Amino acid sequence: MLSYIIQGIFYGFAAAVQPGPFQTYIISQTLIHGKERTLPSVLAPLISDGPIILMVMLILTRLPLLLVILLRVVGGLYIGGLAVGALRAYKALNAGSPQTALANHRGLLKAVIVNMLNPSVYLYWSLVTGPILVIGWREAHAKGIGFLMGFYLTVIVALACIVMLSDASGRIGPAANRKLRFIAAVTLFGFGLYQVGMGMLGYLEMHRCLYGQFVLPSVERLDGGQDWK
Image (cartoon, rainbow, N blue to C red; front, side, top):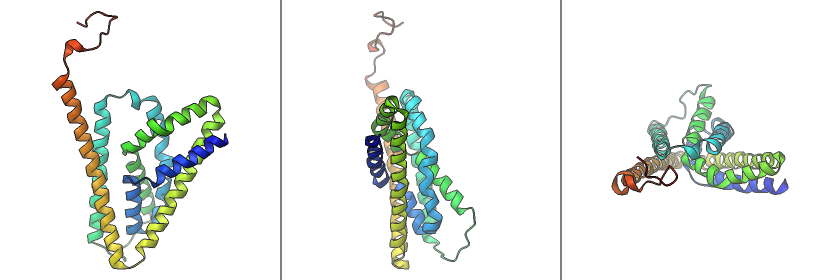
């Protein structure tokens, strides 16, 4: 079991520090709202990854390619919308603006949505951590649970450290803080644009394979050797 806990710690750290839309989102939120309001967002993987793991293990690998591409495009558009909001906050920076008590809950909800719409999470669980979890679970349920515990404990601690470091960097001065907010917003927009672009490229490639080189008579025979008619 110890080996699976260690693997969970290793892969959890790798997932948390890998640059991506979710990490950029919590950095931008830290620079805008501060660490107190952003720290609850580090719990987002605990909420979002459960359905993601089940989906990857049971459903996602059987979905048509078009739906996977659509998920990527939708995720990119949503992340782009968050980037627009971050840019508006940068332009209308007002440290004395009133904040509602619901800010923490809304920030956590947005973080959950960002994580669930991030195709990298699905790929990570289907190609990297998913097989380890399945093997450990089959050997002994305790091993699978140990892997998950090591993984998520490390993810939460690492993300919390990212928030704390981002908050510390945001205190170096108002001008530097504004620049960091702008960089975070632009980077977030870049991730959204990248996901939309990759989704569109995936669709074009699928379309080319289906209608460019795909010939119906060359389809694999489906009835034990007889041509499909």
